[in-house]
Length: 317
Image (cartoon, rainbow, N blue to C red; front, side, top):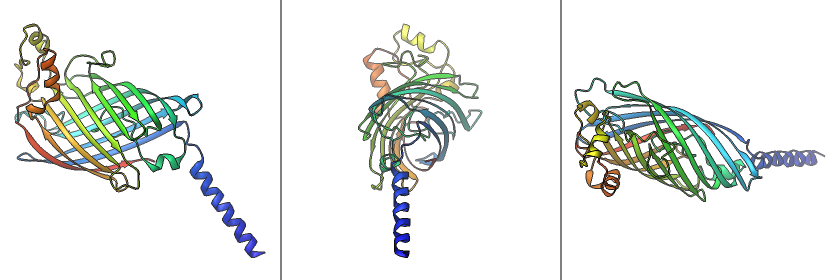
């Protein structure tokens, strides 16, 4: 009798565990994430960035789980100091720390929606909505998908202004993603403000690995951030100048471009990266502007520099 009771308890426990693993996740997804980054720049010392993002998404099935749409919204904040992308490099600038607030709306149609925790825990695939320098707390549950949307940013800096940035992403087999943001340009003309300023453009190539691997995510990214002076871009374009003339040194001090190679271990909750700033020979945006006869933004305020960093990551499951 006792053996029968124990057997029934074990069967019931096992059935409960299987049910928890195979039970579909809710169509409504909520997430919150924080990334804290410390970076050392050669000749310029320690830098930091804190990124916090909250996200909400809701899966809308069109053909059961074979095809559907995942609309999502995110709100977030970035806090960082001088030297990090988005800061002003002018040594006499009136502030040394910087703050960005953003809100995002993205729609993601996709095929083969993964619905069980066992499927999703096997490999964490971020639902990108802007770039790799913000926290991405939600997961892209599709095997194949395309995302498009807009980010609206505000900043209290007197030499900054509100900005709308378009976003586009392709997800392939939950193994590879290509993410692209721009305030205009190809694909995103109607999703950005087309002012060619501040977060002017960037791309992230990401590879995703199983949770059993020590490294769960590898990202290679390029980013371009530029200052803004009224009429400077239009004047340079009309006069066919090679680069944009900045009379205001405080505007010019924002110009930076960055290449970054990042490795993240979701098992350990941290990442590490190497990055290079302002090496004009590998400026992707300059290359595109040269080939389209459009003025480019010079980046030599501090000159080129190499840096390395580590990040501690927290996200809700």
